[in-house]
Image (cartoon, rainbow, N blue to C red; front, side, top):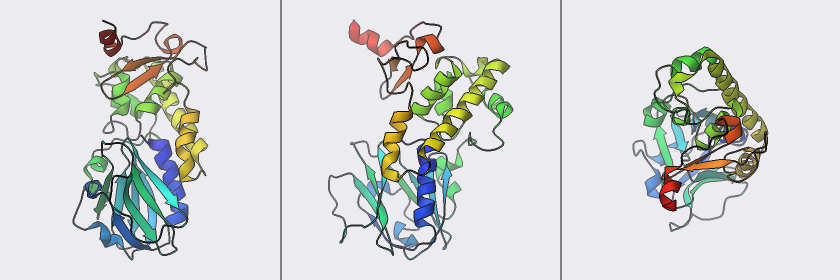
Length: 287
């Protein structure tokens, strides 16, 4: 799933390639991707793109007509830039293409989604706050005013584990499964630690890890073409998706806890005092 750093990089890439250019066609291929119908998605045709913004994991293309094309790439969605779009309209079918946006220059982009769980979402609205997911977003962790006190205030009444709290978009915008693992590894904290139990020192450490991990990921992605962002994300991860590999900090074996539709990775030495976390799903399989 694209998270804050990748969406931030896409925002920068699209700002360079879209702003000041006119949209001539919007071609929905998978109707399920459209989450709003009034105004229709074609309403942004013949409009100039005036700005590209990010709201958490949402991309927002603002047009001179006052409309916004807002996209959430979900777990398996992606944006593919094309210097030259194919001639003729795309054919509806079983492929990954969900929506195509064509510019007057012949360039444009495709929104695609792999897999069978179709969660990619496109909205056309007068105000991004009309999108429910945008309206309920918590503060952006890279905002200038997101200091350690702000983080402490957000977590002080949280009875959930840190992993779940960090992933809650209504609490903190933009962090998903991968970067929550990376942040907790950098902070040397267990993903199962209760969020409300942090001491002031631990809160400060988590704040540094949160801002530092995301900032470093944004910097690694800055300037890359859209097609290279997935590979850059994977190469920059230290624990997420690296079960069985040595921890780059201490050399211990990275372990995993599996859930019904996701998993987390962590280093026992760095994060849990050397003790493996209980993996109930694995335990059931071994019985």
